[in-house]
Structures are given as structure tokens and as C-alpha cells.
Image 1 (tube, rainbow, N blue to C red):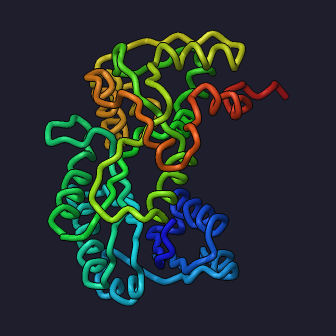
Image 2 (cartoon, rainbow, N blue to C red):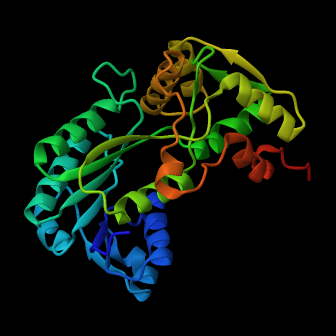
Length: 298
């Protein structure tokens, strides 16, 4: 394990905070956390974390924020309001990290990034990986698969209605929990690895919507049927159910990637990085069984 000064960006988000907590548990050495909202990390500051303000839309904040860091975790931002904004933010952060003397950058990328990916946000991640390649510093691109945690949003309505709609055909994804992504990121950041690598971060196996419907039925005690639809049909249905159209189209693009077999196969990267097997979809849903079951009347 490296004893370099480590820095985690986006540390007030779910993933970033969890990475900081894991690092605090594992190592006593210097730890920096950056965020646009330092007040949200006062509890971590009291535990010895050097909390600093950083805003990727304000490049002037970055030199002071990154000063002294040797290894940096760049957590991809949620700026998807306009095409290219997120990639611009990431480029600014990479440039500032290089200028600050950071030796290695760990980046949370997307599984199966490719120029022809149907996933609407794939371009941002591809451009960021290209910027890392051109930066001259060592990097680890952690290409995270779909979060298992997202199923807690899509499966409860399916249990309630008895129908699970998706545009993935018979395809599936090697879903990975946010906790496993956090553990992988903490391990990669704290490691001694100095070169460049791209790692596909997954759970233990590919799970289809047929599998999800069966699991939801088993765990809820109510029948759930998977009904495949075409992407436009999925978008129309999701919008009618209240989902903003851009979000619906993004989710449909992930389904298309599943149908094309782009969100598998599973890998052993989580175990290689952390020494522990990743959590399966079944184990995750069993642990959250209450979220799938309909609330009792009254």
C-alpha cells in the first residue's frame, strides 16, 4: 500500500464520501478531500481529513485544492446538462493535477467505453480517458458497470404493477454495487501502481431482465413479468410515468448496450484490487428485500 498523500475529488457525493471513509479505516497517512461544499464534510475534517474547496467550473480553485497530492481519485461529475461539459470539467481537473505534481490519477469511467457505444454518456468518459493518456502521468481508469443500487429504483414499481419493462431484449449487465466500486477505487488509489491501466469493474456475473423479474417475484412474493419493448416504446412509457425525457433516453441507451452485449462479461477486477469477491445482484436484493415488498395496507 502506498503512503503517498491521497486526494479524493467529489468527496461530498455518495461514492466519494465512502471512498474517504474506507481510506480512513485502512490507513493513517495524509488524506485530502475536495468538494464544492466543504461544509458538508465537517465530520470528516474532524477525523483528520484535509477538506478543501474545489470547483471544476472555476479552474482558479484547483491549484490550491490539489497542492501536495501525489495520487488523485477523479470521480466523474454529474454535469450532463449539456454535451461536452463534463469532459471539459475533467480536462481542467487533469491539467491542474499535472501542474500540481500528481503522479497518478484514478478515474471512475464507464464499462466498455468505445467510440461506437450506444450509451449517451460514453463520449464524456472516452474523451476523459484520452485526456489522461495524453497527460503524461500514470492513470487507472476504473470502468464501472451499472450500479446494482439503481435496481432499487426500477424494481419496486415493477413489483407494484407486476410488469418490468425494458429495451434490453435478452441482454443483461454485470451489475456492480456502489460499495464494491468504492472499495475498488480506494484500493486503486492507495496502491503502489504507477503505470497506466484500464480495468472493467463488475459484479460476479451478467444478470438479464428475465433474471431480475424472477428475483423480484421471489423476494417480493408477487409475480413480476419482464416485457421487452423497443427503445422508443420504453422512452414513451417512462416519460408517461413521469421520468424526464433526457433521463429516459439515457436509461434506454443502457438497455440498448445490454441488448448488444456491451455490459458484460463479468471480470475479476474487484477481487484483484480488494482481495474480496464482489456482491451479487441476488445477495444485494436479498439484503434490501424490504424495499421490494409492497407496504402493508393501513
